[in-house]
Length: 318
Image 1: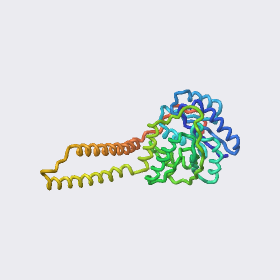
Image 2: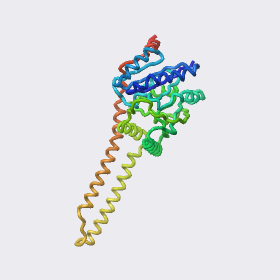
Image 3: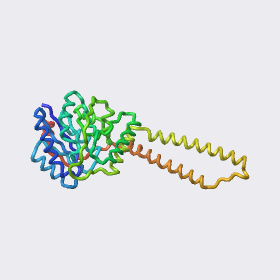
Image 4: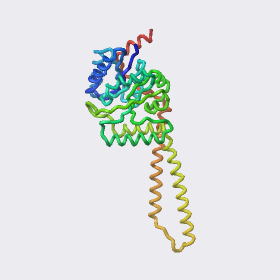
């Protein structure tokens, strides 16, 4: 019998975790041909989610939990969690019901058809329309400039075959970007549409800085446009500056006693060049930061506690 792993990353989701686990179990009760495990990986919640997960694991041995020592971010934690699953495939979904559990049979159907990755694409969404517009612009920008095919409106919700998860285990990337890896590695993939729901309870943990981190990780990992823009614009400004300087010199030589120029244009030019330089120094700094994080090769996650993984550990020891 095939085993399906459900991976649920959590951070301050006390109002959702128990109800979500019941909804998932309800779906698998309709799919008796599969065994299942539900793995929660918690990013150091502070609202009582951990105590709730401990009780859930105590009541049901099919529910497992990894409690991180601190918050390792919304990129590292899900990928680390995928690598801890033991099923023939794993389904990654968020804890707030924005990813509908009713999609589980559809994901499994495509997997049984031979697809190693089944990506759920949110073709419509009940989220804020302005946020969806910004996300759409971001996806199209990355897709246009990336050398690797990028998947629009793919949040990570989907099914991943164990063969793909084995590749994740071998990557040794301390700053992985799952959506980029899925597009890059070329596994047989199927896209299925869905409507993203509103959060059922609690508040979103995303803010400007967390979204910016994700955007820049994707930008620096899969595009060269930032560095090339700096080069092209630098050459362009240098050429224009040379022409202006040459014209000024000629006018000065011809009309040396009549031609005068105030300091205002010079100051404006200095400020403009300074601003352009600062922008691109900051952009190149993002690339350097990305390289630095990868060179350090720090672990994705440090665990504080594992729940209901004892049986697998005992079998491995034997």
